[in-house]
Length: 322
Image (tube, rainbow, N blue to C red; front, top):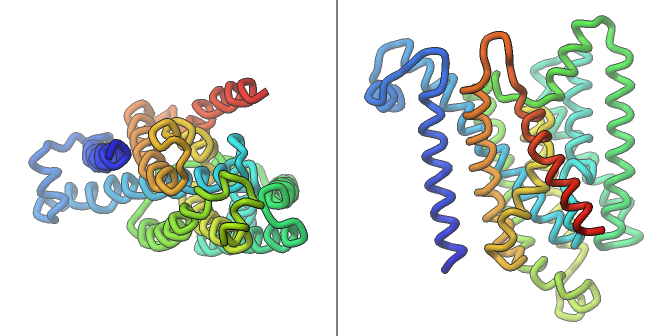
């Protein structure tokens, strides 16, 4: 009952964060006008600001955060490694490589398909390499190797940028931001993220048993290969969709599950959906604070802020584990 109560509270926090983010922006809008704008019954500029700019950005922050949180919880449960995260196992690097290639060859309309496609390709290659050694250790080794290769190719593409403006566009995109969010991004991200989260939720009961050890889980009828496929494909969909619209946003999938782990007693069947809600709450609130703190000449990038929050937590966790 305690976990369900926290889930309800986090849903309410997400809704409140999305609603209050509609107030943040260079144009002040009253409470009544925001309600009218949501219904499409306000004046022309208010309807456009609410429905085309602020609401899509808030919804996108929630979707991206949910995908990152659920992916981190699933990877940590499968690998039984508290340092596991989408960025550390190569999913984010593969998705970023696809988007960077689309930007490099000047095909901005292909950023989303390229990021999602490369994330899926990386996931398939990762799983193929891990087939000879099914389980957590094989997936970790394959993920680290493929992620390092994708990062190296991304650096090569940036090194070959034809001019400083093209390089700066790639660098700024890799910092992660939701400033250009629109309705199309929400329509692209929502079904992919929800499908990926559904696959991760389906792996929860198996991860609960895997906590007893792989041999014990197999003796109880748990298929490690099936669970691995569910997690790899689920993470690829969530991370690919998130990177496609927001760039590289790190460490959310690392520390959000750890913050919420004490609520579920490490029960992944509950931790994965709870981490999805926690990630949505965190990224929505963080993006709202960034919008409130940023000025015209001092833009803050979401990926930089999440890394500044996550790196100290990562170092503390590594020190504690050692």
